[in-house]
Image 1 (cartoon, rainbow, N blue to C red):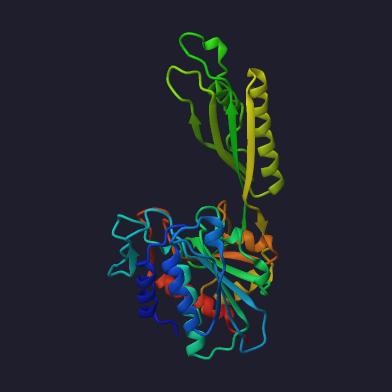
Image 2 (cartoon, rainbow, N blue to C red):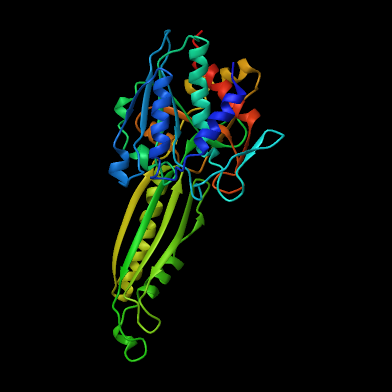
Length: 374
């Protein structure tokens, strides 16, 4: 039932759109028309205007297909944006079925293969008149910059209790049932400027305060659940000026939300102590990008996926924990029990990104099996 040529053609069409984060309008307009042609009712929200308004920004797409049989409603999701370099992409299909870019850009399999698999599933159930429950589809905008699109989506629209987010690299059949809290922090240090040659004693070096605070931190892998990183330091105004301001930015990730919060508190304390020692001022801010979730391996959403793989002869799924965020963090935050499933993408966020047509076909088969009502 899955049409391999149609999968490839759909991928090529979607791949041709320039859709880096906050520039997804063209691909969004195409997908709205495509979903409507498949019989779904479609809405677009104002995420683009809320997040980063420009002539190419776009909202999240919500689409609904009424079921033709009794059964538990299901949600399927992917995202419309790609990372940079993602403009002028050219997909190349090799003789062995491998698909790559020309090496100058990412391929965009993250997350175009997810979108294509969902569209193929919707096409097949329409063509074959397959009995299915209510189906909801959300294509989120701006997922790559810490799930900004899903952060402003109205989840009260969703009726499904269970969801499948197609946004995981590796072999199809792999699923992620947990992901961490990600907290970003910024410490803005204000000291006092002075001429470094004539009167350095009158200054308070923000760089000195920052270095002392950072050197007191435990960074890297804190424990089996938690990591911490300082990734950016910028400030100062001249080589001969005692630096008045410095900004230090970083992140904390933990699969245990309380540990993430506790680690950030320790980081803040280190900066406060260093500032107090030298008489500097600290403005410390924290932003939660996503919150942790964990779905039990005995959950119905995983059980249904296992049955689909078994029915197709694909064996048992590989269940992993991921240390990256996705739109699924927001699904679970708002009470939708979701898992992230592999969708035929590999080496994502690099110009060596690739997928195999066999894997994309397999992904579409699994989705089609998931929605069947028996």
